Each structure stands twice: as C-alpha cells, then as structure tokens.
View 1 (tube, rainbow, N blue to C red):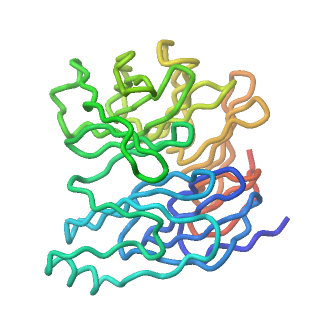
View 2 (view 1 turned 180 degrees about the vertical axis):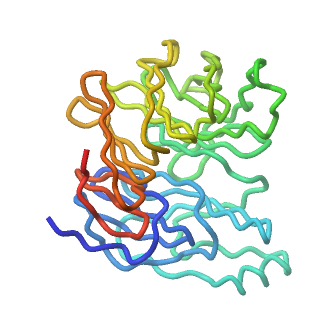
View 3 (view 1 turned 120 degrees about the vertical axis):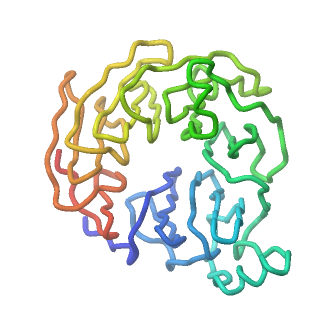
Length: 301
C-alpha cells in the first residue's frame, strides 16, 4: 500500500494505539493513522526541537528544548482535532528576554521546566520522566504529580556524574525500568517510585535506547552498531553485531525486527540477518520503514 510521505525529515515516530506521532528534526509534527497515513497537516506548535515524547490514548506528551535561549517546555497535545502552528523563534527570543512564557499552540496543559528533560515513558495511563541533575517524576495525563523519586545512583559508574544521562524509561513486568547510557538499569516500584533493583551491565559501548516487548524481552541499541538482548534485567546480556547503529525496533511475529544506519535487520532462530539500504531507517510502522528523507519504503530484511 502506498503511503504519503511526511514532507519533512523525521527523527522518530512516537507509536501509540490507533494514532502515532511523527516528529521532525526542527519541531515538525504530524499525526499518523494505524498504517502510517498522515491525519491532518504538518504543524510546528513550538519553535524548538522536540527531544522526547510519548503517545497516550487521547494525547501526546513531550519535551521541547531550545538550548540557545535556555528554554525547556513540557506539554500535552490532543490527538483529536487539528493541530495548529505556534509562535516563531522571534517570539521565543522576545519572551525569553522579557521573562515571560509562551506555550506550544493548542496545548491541553503546559509546564516550564527548570532543568533540561531527559527520558520520558508511559506507565499505564501515567507519564514518568526525568530531568538532568534532578529526579524522576510520575504524573497523570493532566500533569498532576503522583510521586517523585531520586535519580538512581550506580556506585560502579557514579564517577561519570551527569555525563551518564538517563536515556530510557520503560514499563515492564518487573516495574518501571530506568536505563542510563553507561549501562545502569534501575527498576522502580510503579506505586511509589521506590527502588526495587539496581544493576550495571558491562558493555563496550554506550546505550542509545532500550525497548521491552512481551515475549521478546529487552533489546538495547548501542551507539556503534551492536544490539544487546536480555530476557530480563537480571539475565546475562547477549551482544550481537549489526551493520551499523539501530534506530528503531519492534518485536513482531516472534522476531525482533529493526532499521537503522543504511540497513534493516532481524533476529530469527538466534541469528542476525541484515540487508543494506540506501537510506537511513528512522522508524518501523505497520511493516514498513520511515526513512530520514520522510518517505516510506519496504522493510527489506
């Protein structure tokens, strides 16, 4: 099935249930239907890059960060109805100089953050996120705080300090797993944020993302072109080579499938199969790959 391209270079797709959100490198956004067809026009609700986001049942929640003006925003946009374009960079500059705040256009709610946001994840109908040098917070879909917890500290890698960023927050059967670049994983109790488990994986590269799937366990994406498989956080890691960095993965039909730097890949029967591609794969959706030029192509592995 042919699918319309996005018209902008995407950095990722925040997958949801029936609605997904494609995010561009310059803050562009568009809603996608189950098969990847655009639902409405491309909009830019706020004049800053979108660092992270999650798609809930009826809204998308994410972070905008403009480092030049030291501006960080968190907001929720509705999945029903049309999105609208927001202010421009001149408005943001003037707002920053005046000490007043502008918000993403059409936001259900909006918060100015006093620290740079890092990772965000879903936990049921709630949102869990972290900030640089701050803690970890759970809020409901209306931004009401449920709990806050201290940032996990892994003694083995504690000397890295803020250089070891938190990169993924993922709900799993054990609780809420918080992953750091240097291989630290902490499992938090979803009821109150208390620490249940703490572990460090000894890996030769930084983790860029962590994904969990029922039946597939964990897939960790490393910066330099390897992936790591774990049944659970307490299991020994299995490191597998790929053709290059992996940017998105899904567990589908009993197999891990992924796309990334000029290749598609899958894990079948304990073996890695990869097929080169001319473009860079950014995301997988409904059996096809969104590439970095904003076009769909066939998944090839």
